[in-house]
Length: 219
Image 1: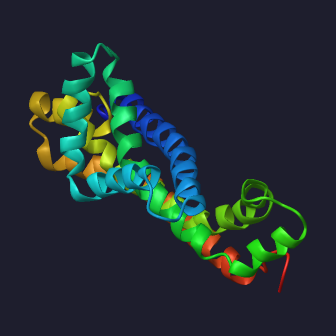
Image 2 (image 1 turned 120 degrees about the vertical axis):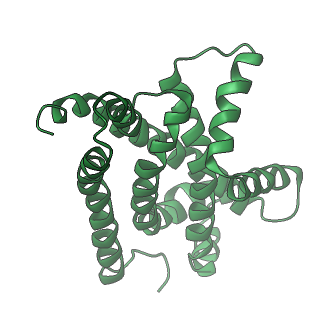
């Protein structure tokens, strides 16, 4: 197995890139949608579209979302490399979860924070930017680190659109070497530090969040 290990390192780098680019994009898109949902909390077209999107993400398998991106984007004139199709598919999926993470984190901030900001003459948008979001983002980080772990594992499904990430490269090597069990074990060894690393970060952030005090306008 020593001879095939170096051949899996470039695909491993592809796995890392596609996962963390998707996480970066999903974090900010989810934060935006979660904030919009919180600002316009009453039933309205904006919330209807956002909640329909989240429902679609949560209720459909990721493989369908990947195939949809791969097959539908060219039909509307968007022709991209499979790497960026993979980024779009993973971002589409992760944004749904990040939207819910953001919405729940914002909702967990005490209502008194809004009232205190209002008495200082701050409107809802200023309150969100300078008071609510700094606290909510801190609460989002443990769940976001867990989402990173999810994306690393989900990236293996991108093998169905022939993206040469870690799992796809291992499949190709299995066909040539017939070392199926060995390559499965090698995949697990390479995925393990990535997933354990992000899980450790999530645990650390959760402990740090629980042990530290928030800076609030009201106590």
